Length: 101
Image (tube, rainbow, N blue to C red; front, side, top):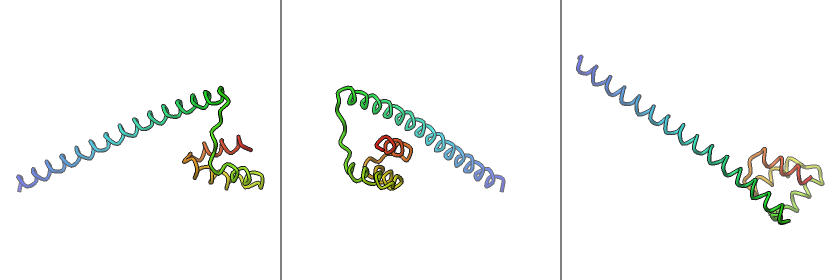
């Protein structure tokens, strides 16, 4: 009986350690992803500055459609289309569409 309880305790501790290790791994991965996302955002901002300095502008697919939606006062739909085209997040898409208006 005592041996059985000891085996169960060892298994429970092993499971707990496994779960803690998984949580730690996920937290580390999330931190690395967050850091990478910030670095990518910085590079994108720098690239935008270079493009602006050179007078180059990125052609936005379906840009005419987005502009038309803005003219019609359909800002929310324009943001949705912008997000579909670019894969941007909601805040980024909203800011970009507002700059287009």
